[in-house]
Length: 457
Image 1 (cartoon, helix red, strand yellow):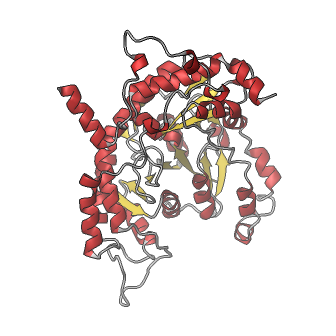
Image 2 (image 1 turned 90 degrees about the vertical axis):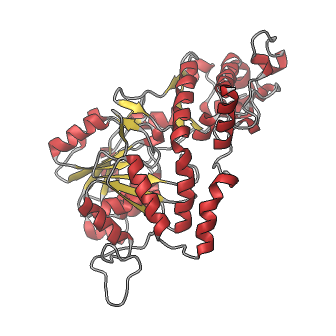
Image 3 (image 1 turned 30 degrees about the vertical axis):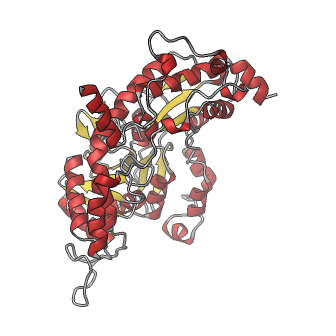
């Protein structure tokens, strides 16, 4: 009875899909799968798992979620008001900080936080090359120079053992990116920041509810920045947030995101002018309503993601050539916006990663190869060649070939050729779904030579 009630709860919460049932062939006493099911789908066999097994994302429960949204829509008050204030209060409480400010997206959360940390032209910010492009564009948008620190391929995070070698007299901050929802080594990073008097801003856009020593990611530095974009673990479509315990910093952020008006005046008037340069990136009431509905499920979903990720990792590590992520010892919980592992083609008869992905997708397992190297992309050179940067820096400082030589990240280059990702909604499936992912990769490993001959003639 309890099991049935739990399953009903998970279904209503969107944690299990309707088709996430124990396959009959896997139940104890049933015969093994047919020979056709043992043949990889890419070679003409049956797919291991059906598309409908995966939880559709984002989740929306019409019965339970729409009441607050409809109340907001029918009120006619759609710009920032009480619902935004409530969401900010709840998000700050969730992260364990005293303040929260919502903005239109995670990119603007980073941009505003960097700006109001008084970082700007002439300043260097240390950052990982293994991240989404927004992390770097937020640095460039403030006239700062990104300095790349190579990664630890086992954790997919910035290698803190390489940070101090990158610090110069211009270094003013570290952007600590918890990429993929896996926390970076904040314990060591904070020690370095304190030693060199550097500001720490956390890019926690992919890591809501992740923890280090039971403290929430986003609450360690001057500021933590989050994203609520449609693919994120808390999906609003678009949206972002800044959290902090520094009231002066948060007051400045509020004014900057609201046309530079004094804090507390949401719309301004002819009698109260702007006292600082600002922008307009305010959150809306209906975004906040969607966020409150999604927030109600986030804790239970995060727990399930962690359980499934640990189980899937315990399976995959037994397949030669599959190297799952590792977490730092201080990590007490990850967010698993993505489930990553490294793929070694030499253990798969030389089958390329591209063809491994193709074979895995044919089995019904959505997957991708993840990021390409950021530190070599053209947008950085374009920024350096802009009038804005040429007025802020010397020609020598903006020589792109010199910059490239100083920002080589060979381990990141290698990781970008090896990584394989599963999106977070796969981890909301059942343990049996994780078994099917494992069996899909086993099947490809077993028939790697035949797959290679077909796809790489």
